[in-house]
Each structure stands twice: as structure tokens, then as C-alpha cells.
Image (cartoon, rainbow, N blue to C red; front, side):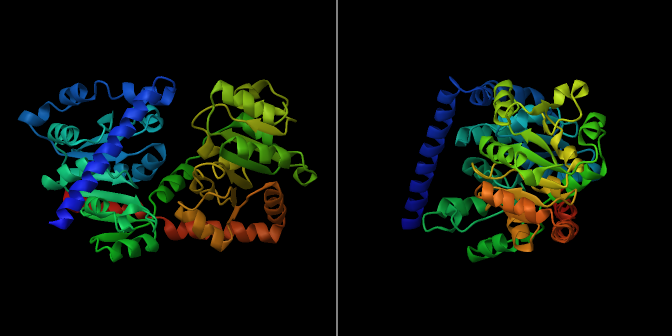
Length: 423
């Protein structure tokens, strides 16, 4: 009885918390473009769903529902979607996103039959969504634990899978107050984790059917690296210079990189900077940080090939631009956390980033191995850069990165082989 009361209380707190969170987004939509897209994208969600899935009432079809929080999680789930579509071509794919940054970029993803936003999590929304879609299999990528959706899937005995998961001791699942969160985990038929530490944590709270599979993003970035795109203007810009490619940068990153570009240790090197935000206001700020010395990617055809800094003001280029690099710098480490380090690793580049990397399995592993370098200040950045200029030290880092990628590929095949048993 006491535990039931605790669960009921936790559920009430969850409902209040999520309600306030969704209300906060609606308020933010009055001022913020991203929040506006979040709200507007859901305004006609259920009428659109009913129209799209009207066939389910008379002639039901098998639907595989894949949910991703945003673009990064989509890239983890993408190799799995591709394998499922290849193995089950007659099954329909529903792809949902929580964030506009994922939905807006992948709303036309060709392997998905439908792409929608995920409705705000409430009991009524969960019932309406699942009764309309009638999924044969539900796949959540990395995280996004929505109680009502998971509970309704569980009640209807829909196989529900969590892939590419990473867990940490400070999460509610492993705290005395985390009964509701543990209940969510029990809704999953299978949990595929990226690292052994996550598996050990789940073992402690008696979560079954946990498989150590690794990160499907490794397969994705290897695939990207094998299909190089041509950038003749960048080839002209690079010439015979070694290049540091800085991906998904923020202001704090760019300030450090600007200082490095002015240091004598950077002589003969060139710098390619790909900001996380490429709005006109942000690009103007980036040019200012580099004292007007940078040339923009969109102006590169008419630019002087002697320029030393290239700022990429176009979307969708970064993953292939690492082909020009000798060293990579990944942004975000002075904010909420670093961005994708696996993309440069697919080109065997040693990687430098800021101090906030703890949520990323590959970053932690490679810091221990010696293929990645975390920096807190310009002096740290300069020191790491100078060490990597040493040929022997550099080649050792390249070797460690290459070994990691070879060892950790194949997660999507491992996961898909088990998923197919549910279809």
C-alpha cells in the first residue's frame, strides 16, 4: 500500500512537472523561434495523424515507430532504420521527433513513411497516439523516457525497445525516489546500451534483457566517411597546408580558436570553423571574433586562396569536411556538452574539446586511450595542439582512434538481428 501511494505521488509530481514544462515552452514561443516551431508543429498533430493512419481501422498494416529526441539521436537510429527497411520492406516506418532541430531537418527523410512531432506526454495524448498509430514495434533512441507513452505501450503488449542507451549513477533510476523512473525502464522489452558501466547499473536494479551493443552512430559515420563529397573550393583553400577542422562551435570555442590562430605555433596551418548556429547574426559574430580575417564558405569561389580561416555558413557540410583535417576540435564543451566526436573519428582524426564531455562514451574512452584531449583554457588548447604537432605523438593518437572505430563498429547489426525477432 505504501509503495502504491509513493508511485501515485511520483506520478502526480511527474504530471505537474511535465505540464509546467510544456506550458513553459508555450510561453517561450512568444519570444523564441525554436519554441514557436515546437508549438506550431503540434497544433494540428492529431488530425494529421488520424488522416495518415486512417487505414489502420479497416486494413491494419505493421508499423515500426522510431522516436528520436533530436538530430543527434536520429543519426544513431538511422543505421537501424535502414537495416529494418531492407529486411522488412513491407513494414511502414513512423519517425517522430521531440525537437524542431531534428524534425525540421529530417521531415523529408525518404525511408520514413511518415515524420511527425511527438505529442506532449499525458495519459489522454498517449492513448490517442497509440490507438491511432497502432505500432507493431516501438523504438526509442538513447533516451526520452515519457511515462504515459511507455505505460500505454506496455498495457497493449507492444514490444518496446531502447537503443544506444547510456546511464549514469546520478540519474533518478538509481535513486531512492526513482520508483516511477524504474517502472518506465521495466516497460522496455529490450535495452541496448553503449557501455558496460550502463549495463552494470541496470543489473543493480534488476532490469532484464539488457544487451551491450555499442553505439550505432559508429556505423553511420563510417558509412558517411566512405562516401566522400567533392569540395573543389575547399581543396583550393586548403592547398598543401595542415588543417584544424572545428565542428559545431560556440562563442567560447571560437574565442580560444581565434587566439590559437594568432599564435606562432599555428603558422602554416589553416582553420575551418563550422559554427553550431549559422544564422546571419551568429555568422557576423563569428567573423568579428576572428577579427575579419575569415572568409565565408558561400563566398569561397571568389575569395583569395591565401586566406587562413574558413567559416562555413552552410548546413549539412560538416561530416564530410573532416576529410580535410589533420586535427579536429569539437564545440559545445564549455556549454551543455560536446557535440559529435565520432564524425571526425571516422576520418581517424585526434579530437580536442572542452571540459563537458562526461555524457559521451567515446569521449571518455578515448581520453583514457590518448586519442582525445580535453581543454579548460587557451593554455590547455595550445599545449594539446603543440603535442599533436609531434609526428610520433600524432600517429599514436591516430592509431588509437582507428582502433576504437574498428573495435566498436557493428552495433546496428547486433541490434537489428534481435529487433527482427519481434516482427
